[in-house]
Each structure stands twice: as C-alpha cells, then as structure tokens.
Amino acid sequence: MHEMSIAQNILEIVESALSENPGSRLKKVVVKAGELVAVVPESLQFCYQAITAGTPLEGSELQIEVIPVRARCESCGREFRIESFFFLCPQCESAQVKVLSGQELQVSELEVE
Image 1 (tube, rainbow, N blue to C red):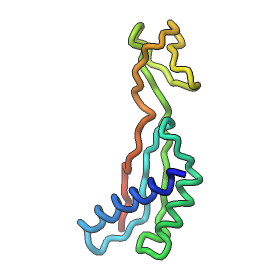
Image 2 (image 1 turned 120 degrees about the horizontal axis):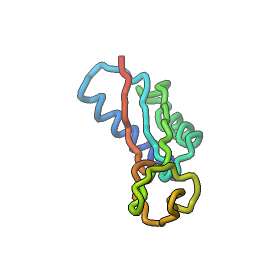
Image 3 (image 1 turned 135 degrees about the vertical axis):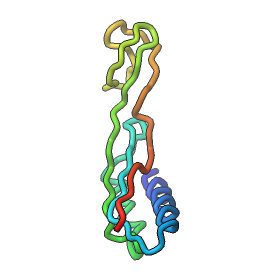
C-alpha cells in the first residue's frame, strides 16, 4: 500500500507550509491524483486520518481530486481521454501518443484558519 507513504509526504508538505504561518490551523488539504498514479482514494483517506491522529492536523479534511488520463496522438493530433490500458488513438489507431494528464500527484490547495 503506497498510500501510507503518500500520506506521510502530504503531512510533511502541510507541516512545512504551516511552519511559515505560525498559529494557523489546517481545515482542508486538496490533493490532485492522476489515474495513472493508482491511488485508491479510500485507502489514502484512511492513511491520512491515521497519520494525523493525535497531531494538530487531526480533524482536517483531505479532499482528493482524481485527474483523468488524457493524451494527444502524435500522428493525427487528436486529443482524447484514455479509458483502457491500450494507449491507442481512437481516430487513427496510432500507438504514438503523448500523455497530457493523469500522472499528477500534488498538494494543490491548503485551507487554513
């Protein structure tokens, strides 16, 4: 389960950001996770709750935005969503595609009070 290490990294990022604003309290952290990262949102939620228990971050909300896999065909230029394990252009069936999104894993927003 790589969600625990992801939760630990989120915790480190949040703690670093909060250290720059002493006295602030985290209400919500938003994470963007591409489909190719293979994060199971429920597992990440569980790990986040476990790792923040007993810390000043306990009770903060973790919001996960799943980013779909999108690609562009290098042969015909069409942009499309990849919905299977076969990265083929639906228009010309070329396998020469460039992934545009779906590989992200980042903390995109912190809501503090």
